[in-house]
Length: 378
Image (cartoon, rainbow, N blue to C red; front, side, top):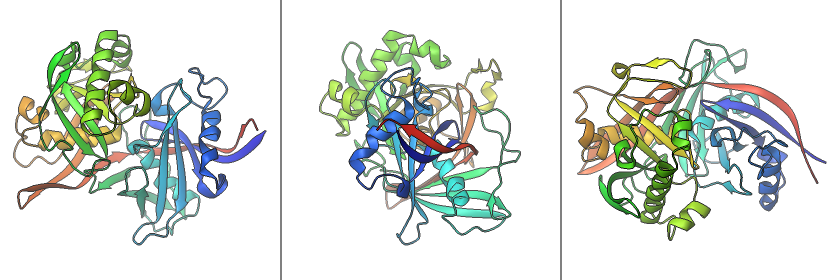
């Protein structure tokens, strides 16, 4: 048996294994074999590992101290693909990003300031900078607090995750096709209006009705709707081809399953969340269901929420055209998702006719669940 030190953490509405780079083999070609065994893949039940059978519970995060100027910590996220012998490193995980700050503090990788330590991160998946504010006391992360986020029971200390200049994370452009609205030709469906954005991670957005959904379905209802899932994967694959991530739909499914994400939306509407709680339409600005690695997410991936929030303020986007211009003075976007409401704070600036996104911030929480040694076969 081989053994590796790890910390199992929740970040936002995701969880996974945190590794110090120095605790892993210097030869990165060994990493995938290690991480797959850690999570118990490719077995879809993941019975022989720590994986939780859905994409949000199959995160690997590798962390190390940075030598870059104005950066404290660098990190790389691996998305273990459930049921496959595959790990995707193309995209960042915004929720696990929230865990990197507290992990770095507790690992002694940064100088601690009280009551708040700002950990300056560099994400190696997307070559982007993120600041995470971490509440600290007695030289360490404060776990307890009164911050509540949808999709997580109880309360914890508030972390503010601010994605700096997040547009063009993978394509170099806020609008990878240079259009706020696209008409995609989808086999078996015909023409579909969509917006393709790259904010923290690439995403394609369509109206829920375009694929026969209402936008209020719970994850299992969508996952069991074979027709809707097939169409959404075709839409995602078509967008992947438009952005240059794949040569055709089959290539997108096989080799780019996590990039882009795909989401459906509708106007605010009341619904029951996955815990049978009532979510009122007055509490949201847009109602969204996001698909992550072929399954409907039980909340909303944080990086997807970044794209959604920018789209809500972006004139010409499918959300803007469908729901209308945000009211004057509004600075946030409240996203209704299967677990409740997520509030995003996008900053959009138009300068010399060019749109820029200096930052997108969100409130998150994180918690150390377990630390110790994980064992794999030789």
